[in-house]
Length: 169
Ligand code: FES
Image (cartoon, rainbow, N blue to C red):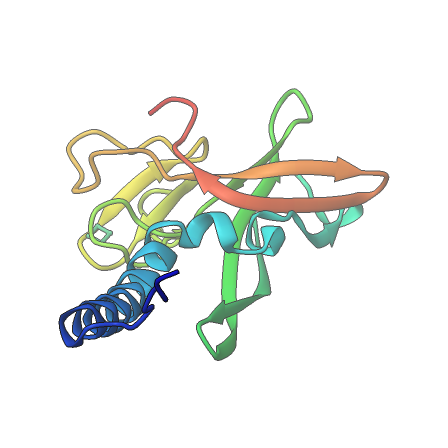
């Protein structure tokens, strides 16, 4: 009976070693790429959550600026991000929450910021103007209406979420 030798040749040893090391290095390079590709899926839903920003009794038919902050985690860095909205009740008693960020180049708009154009939002950077509805006034620099926040009402509390394009955009 012949004894079968079960030795690994030098060539096989090198093949196994190089394959193992190569696979380990490839996994090390691919893992961050995969993580980057699916990052939005891994994020907590906290960022998309609605935030309680005001009591409904504070809201009238006159646009009021409401400020709040959200917690933001960027890698290992945590910060509080300031947010603002112009909020009012329209003629149907629906809550309208407009982004204050001008659609021209991103300055902040103010309600009744220009004496010669009352009842409009005014952007001081390049004289941009918007009607109370948030729609841009023709022949002023902005070419789109202000974005709107997602609105939810629970009892007497107003919650705001993410911005979305204006309903008339
Ligand atoms: S940034 Fe508002 S008009 Fe230019």
